Amino acid sequence: MAVSRADLLTWLNELLQINYTKIEQCGTGGAYCQILDSIYGDIPMVRVKMNAKHEYEYIANFKVMQTAFKTKKIDKPIPVEKLVKCKMQDNLEFLQWMKRFWDSNYGGQGYDAVARRRGAPTDTPATMAPLATGRSGSSSTLSVGGRAGGKTPVGGHRAGSAQPNEAVHNLQAQLREMGTHLEGLEKERDFYFSKLRDIEILAQQQIETLEADGKDDETLREIQKILYSTEEGFEVPEGGATVDEEETF
Image (cartoon, rainbow, N blue to C red; front, side, top):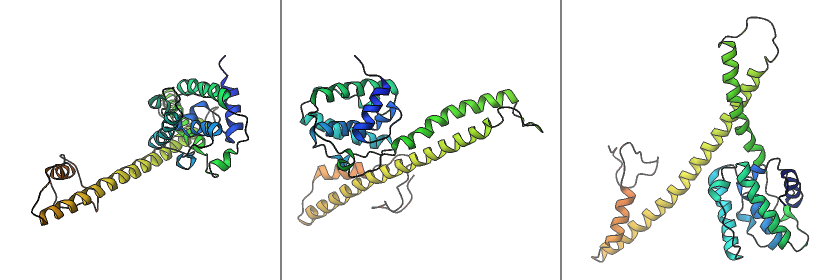
């Protein structure tokens, strides 16, 4: 028999010492990883970001989980692409499966969830909520504008006049969430650019060594060609130009 949402949340919060209020919050992957850790006690929780705020962080958490499934020979596909969208139904079904798996495999040993994650913050739920609220706030803003004809009453305090202020707060919360998301994307961009830069330096050093010996390597040349190729409108990030500082078109 499927466990209800309320019972699942109660079990999850008690087991992991967190304060989730929605099943959707499991889509960050952190809770799933720690459920596994409560069973086996050897999941690398230091690599799990319990307060993940961006989809690429969710995916990183699920990679930890996929590795654990493979190591433990758990024959269960993990629908990562669906779960990271933080939709209720997908995460409800997967959490129900996790609960059944836990019931069958948990040995009853004591589990200190906070110590296992080294006291890492778990404030993801609080940072996810405003975006969903903002979407509903946007809809209410449109409907309010439609009723009032886009005009503000000159005088009098009508019932429901607080709605525009609430809508503004919702939009401001959504804007803050978008700003945080953008910051995360920029960090991800810089992370991968740094990796490409290391590859570029390594390839260049190897080519120079070969040239000094009168040799060449076609594969390294092809790697360089890929690294230096550009598209129309592409701008090299500040400080990232390595071969030619002139502007290209």
